[in-house]
Length: 64
Image 1 (spheres, one colour):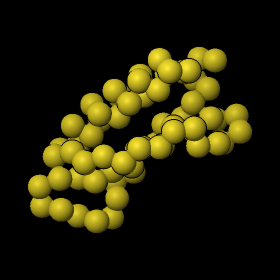
Image 2 (cartoon, one colour):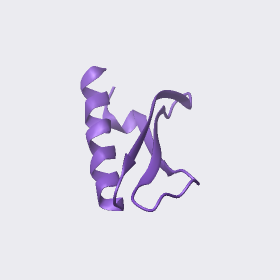
Image 3 (cartoon, helix red, strand yellow):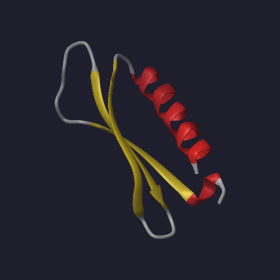
């Protein structure tokens, strides 16, 4: 399988904190729309969120 077979969604959770953004990442199989991996995390900026999401994506792809 290649990276195009997966869809990654990052959701900012509704709860707001002054010093951090709480997020959840989902990696889904596009063919069957199954959630293959999910992880919650906290970051300080949206740029940190994007960098963390990219690291999670590549960590997931190395494991399959």
